[in-house]
Length: 238
Image 1 (cartoon, rainbow, N blue to C red):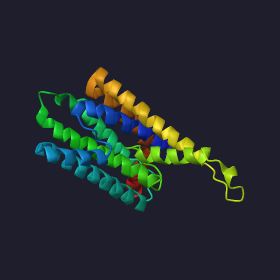
Image 2: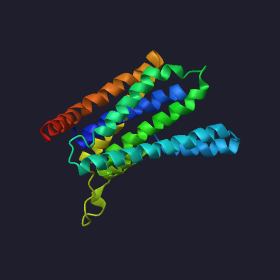
Image 3: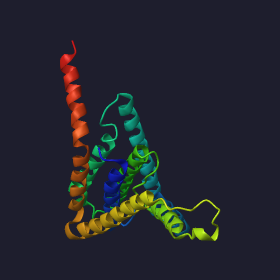
């Protein structure tokens, strides 16, 4: 599989596309839970209890997605499978495919289906964010960019700091590698958001199908390797 930064860049693109396109689909951002919780509080004050209920289920779905990834990765690592970090992405790809192919039923005439779409997208984002968190040892998040922008700002501050004011003090240096990685991730998210919004506006829910195929391309080799190894074990068993 790709390095955790390269994988993070791809997943940032996917998350940006799902977040922006998903908003056009269901009227709600589903990749960052701070916004979901804030909207729940706003809707509670306004007395919009259905929106609060939908937000709560979205939050629980995100947590459930993260739990699912943790269980899948832990199970696979205990068995020394090469596809340990690929399996959650395969599940994400399949769910995105379902959303893209059957999402056309979710429109103004099918308002009752919108909460289910919100829950599905939140679950997908929970899967993805937990996956890259575990893979990168909590260095990278992909479904929201608040941390990326904060870290980038810190390093930019270090970059322009004037060290000559205190010549005997330890020099302040910017971590240029970290800056480059964060800028790459931020750019991927923005490009993904633009692509997702444009794609949904142009072709609707089918715009998620290419995202699903990208994820499949990422994971097909390790998953296929473990599948072949499993078949070989079956053949050699007495």
